[in-house]
Amino acid sequence: MLTYAQLKDKSKEFLAATGLRPDEFERLLPAFATQYDQRYPADKTMKGQPRQRQRGGGVKGVLTKLEDKLLFILIYEKAYPLQTMQGLQFDLSQPQVNEWVHRLMPLLRQALAELGMTPVRDPQAVPTDPLVNEAGADLVIDGTERRRQRPKDAQQQRQSYSGKKKSHTDKNILLANLHTTKVVYLSPTEVGKTHDKKMVDERPIAYPTAATLGKDTGFQGYHPSGVLTYQPKKSPKVRT
Image (cartoon, rainbow, N blue to C red):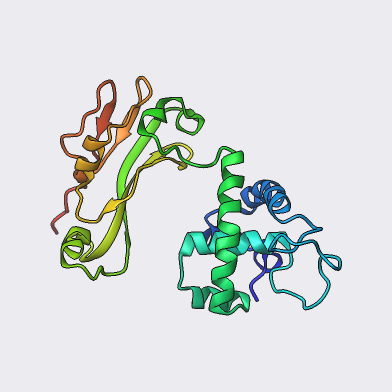
């Protein structure tokens, strides 16, 4: 079974698996533990019934330590594997993985929100968000796609098909702080066919005064008022 104790001293692998450095994990763990204890107090069962014996009695579970619970849900969020594959890493069956995901996901979101580590979802709230202005309002914007199951309905198939990815996808717009690399804004989810610029035109993003914004070709013609935008260009190929 994969455990926090095995992984914590392997900083490169830890970051790749969870998206966090070990010190960031340690910062998140107390907030996650607080949320877990509030939702599942020691004197109650997982179903909220009074315990007949102390926590830990009876058949021993696999995810007994809070740090392993947090590691489990972070890896699931970062890698988004098939639940069967996640179970192979943690000695759990697919139904058990499904149950733990639904149990821990809300607690992780609440813990991240408590620490101010979640991106804003309201595009008009961007200018006042602390993550945006941390170390300077130098931002980058991009559209990101993730694969989804092929819809059965023919019209939904056409709407969700991304010509860029050559598959059926869901899409979001991300805004990140260039200095901290933290995602500061996450747009509502759209179907994969939707163009990046169309998404920001339909839901305009407000920016801090004198912000800079890096963008790619998907945002050509996007020039928010009061924002200095730039588009990196590829270096010309050197012919030999």
